[in-house]
Length: 205
Image (cartoon, rainbow, N blue to C red):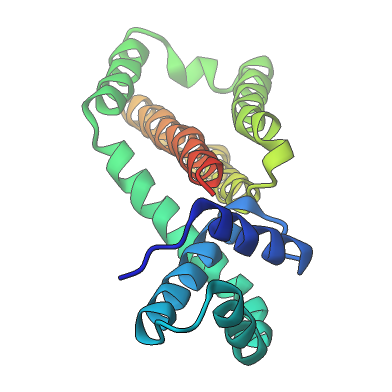
């Protein structure tokens, strides 16, 4: 199959950006889709040049392509969720989660978790942690970071809602807080790794 040149790939990216596809992760996925379609077209019609093939493709597909941006976001989200699942079962994340549980066994967590300052510190720490990747990659406009922060907020809210409204045996509090740390660590690592992945993919355009 005839591969497109870096200049041609960049041309597609610039066109999509000017057409309103702002988010880097969505654009990377769409550029890959368009490039594959054009490579097939150029392979089939050897007399056709890139710009002719591109013009022909966009006349037929531009409207549906731009409408597909939302479905591309869900495709990105699926990749992110799969990445979270992988991260959660990697040795470093399991060790940290287990280490937190072990540490909490030696602390009076039942008393500590009722302390308002402890709750505020936990909430502030979690909020700050999720703010870091958003700030680091704000110029790139990576769409999944906003949605991932929302999912993370929901997970943490449900955890703390459970702790606030259900009388949980002290022996189980260590497990719950350990699971909370484990889940947040997996999500945070994914936020950094997937942001770096799309930034790297974009740099290749």
